[in-house]
Length: 226
Image 1 (tube, helix red, strand yellow):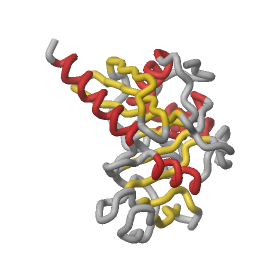
Image 2 (tube, rainbow, N blue to C red; image 1 turned 90 degrees about the horizontal axis):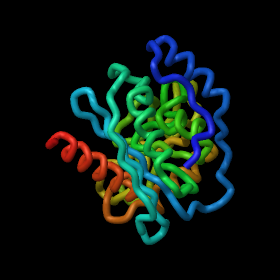
Image 3 (tube, helix red, strand yellow; image 1 turned 90 degrees about the vertical axis):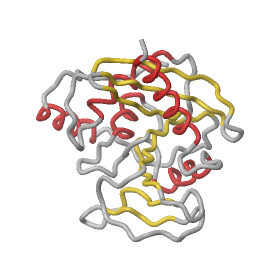
């Protein structure tokens, strides 16, 4: 898979923030226009000074695995909330470069525009890959919301300090904690919610993300045993 643009990842936190602000101007949050058939899930795992990234592409519906990739890379950026892309981004981009297939859309285990500077992992890498992207996180980073209803498909909007909608708090299984969905790039909130629901089967987390999480952990354990 070809990466359309990138930037230096060996930067200071101050420089990282400037990169986020620059990339924010390139975001497009319109509807993606068509129903995605192949959806990639992207996640990363960490062990000491190593990052292990994994990407799994699946056909939707049916959840047939089309292709997967897992890459290990040394960490070069400290843990700083709101700048986590600078830890995960390099290894995930390496995973995408390995892939021969081009997914229609990518779901990241992280935030999209539901971020203090509107530039979470899904937004950042969505711009760099040029792909429609969605952030689907297990916890809130930024914004306010009211608890959604208890049934699968119920959701409430996540809003910033000005009241602008920046995502949705979505119940993907009845009676289970919701996930925090926000557009990354080339998609809107409503289409993000619909896509995440289509990608959920028996679990709270979308299948492509769940498979990528499992692959990253498996790669980490295998590498650690060497």
